[in-house]
Amino acid sequence: METQIARTDSVVSLGDDDIETVVEDSSVALVEFYTEWCGTCKRMEPVLEALAEDTDATILTIDIESNLETAIEFGAQSTPSFVLFVDGKPVKRLRGGQNEQTLRDLIAQYHD
Image (cartoon, rainbow, N blue to C red):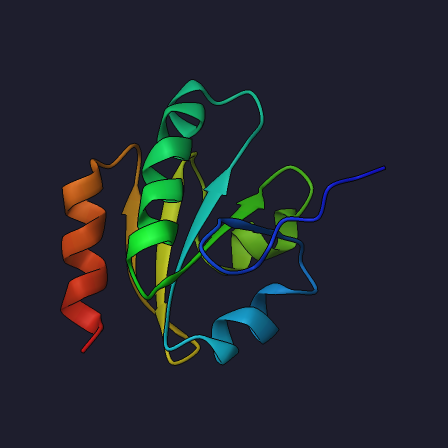
């Protein structure tokens, strides 16, 4: 039996078909584009979980290898890449590992 992850207070993993619906439904959404084999991406997991728990932003992850078209569309050419969406539109891109405070500050900048 597979465990379902609740959408509240957790990181949500998406596919190509889901991203536009979810970011449009969120006032602020941070998307991490990753690959399974990326060590830096693995180190980002607890940071993303913490952000999901105590910020109002929606935190999402998309596997580049499974969702290449989406990664290309949003300019995620390396892993990890982060794209911040505000009201469904991409407003900021960051490449490489980020510290938690940088991501918190970025979210706060766009969240009232």
